[in-house]
Length: 445
Image (cartoon, rainbow, N blue to C red; front, side, top):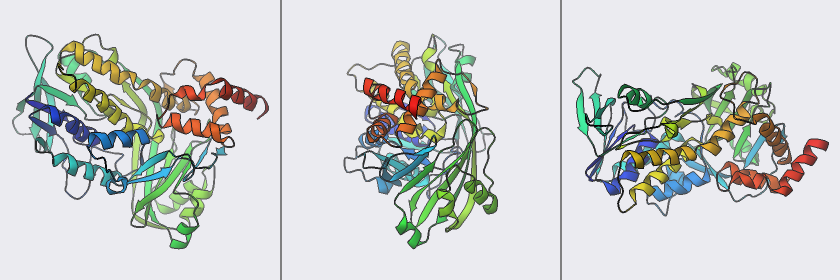
């Protein structure tokens, strides 16, 4: 095969290009933003300077796709922390039980992470990246629903529209994708959406902790989640290296932490537990505060489309972006690319409408469990609106009891960690033994 084109040059686009590179003569990434050689931040990644986590299943896929058996997380700005021993986590009114779980969650310095991935990907001979290249449409063949390339503009966008033909086009452009519009304009497909609106706010500052304080901590990561239904404030802190720590204060449905340091500290003091505030008041803020807003979870149901073009697929946040507080995003992108690679590795792979429809359905199938894990607890908070999953009230009652058990029952917490990080099926939380414990918890507390 000759040429593949990837729309979007962030983590999703970069890793898509790496996945495609063994199967095409050339892979061209088109990224609308101006990129720089110093870091991985750019305008189109609003959450870039804020808290990120890479789940263990995501770290393993990343290692495989980068062909890096000696993968060193720290070189990529990833700071692993055991999910029960080194993560101190308050949720649903309890501190989760602390012990060595053997499951590491990768807390990210997103700028360093994306910059390093970009260097790795662009070191591959047949991958090219064009920045300030905005894709403005698809090239659709007259004889049918065949995508034969893209149209794009460079620079300020006033230049002549350029055409770039391709044997395969992958949209990895993120939540702001134009695919639904393009497919509708071409009379190929009408895309429906599932949305849960929780109005998430992130306000992030960096702090330098004094050595005596850092040495006294019995955790690497501290996470304090809001207490539904009425308490909608939370926060987290973790190390970034060079003595810096990232602190993100979170708000649901109208709660927004102020940017000024006095308002920021007052907000931290108002969280359900005081420990984050106690750390911050002994620490020194560095740099400027940063804000990020996202309406909530959005799932574009390409998997339900009755027809689909050949030579075209959509991955990552361009398909589905969940509430970021649950840390699923990067891992979900990489799981999509596992499915894409499986298609490419078939001896007689093709990109017919039937094949690409199957790929989108497989990608959609992979969103069901993460979608429930994000949407269900979101509906515990007053003010949340959108498509409510069937049986959500029963599910949330079960989750609440389960999380309270995780504060005192090591087995329950271990099972939750393994399900939450996609290492095991959620069915591990619904065995007869677990259900019995949940019933006792609900009856007697």
